[in-house]
Image (cartoon, rainbow, N blue to C red; front, side, top):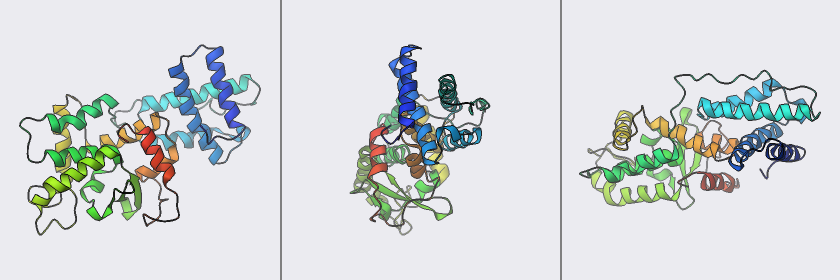
Length: 304
């Protein structure tokens, strides 16, 4: 966590050393703690809060921000457990006089928590159009849609309304218009861009009608796809991929966020990509440096 400043950097390293020497934790477990707690301390640093100023309400705000990105209850529970362990350690080391994490409750395993695919599952889903027999006319379109849903974490409404003029593949971004017409720029990996380009060159051109306008993804009549059509398409390919549970386009949005965060991506960058905060400029080429979120996406997204 190179963005962490003192004393948070030293605190994290001391705790990780404690896990290694005193508790003999595995390298994998220590890496999970480093990712989870690095993100937590960065959040507090940005608030900004000094160590002794952190209160239970601050920790709840952090957990709420994680939940907003679509993390499963089990992942939230892991983060809370790590935060509790850190504050317990700081109390024992007399670096704190009170433990603000003591009253933080673990999330309930609610039935309505977002469904998230594992990396191996999502790769099977993305490859499903290629394995369908016989391969239909719309294989290229369907493959491009699945790749894009996972690559950019967009809502299904944002996908069906996407215009070609908002693809900026030379810069590695797409412009998305979200809820309330809020605009954001989202990085897109090479795989999704390649499949979208193939779809545009090999299939879309043959689907054009008077009602196509500039809409990227078209149905057999050259019109904009409906949200239900995308939902049914995702369900069909999930079954073909052997994923025997309820899957929707929104599942890929939650999966996008979860895989980035669990890989250690910065919470602020993921929130920008999801459109949970309106902080991007209205033009693609401005003085604002977007290298940071593009590098986060490229580094932590399995298809980046």
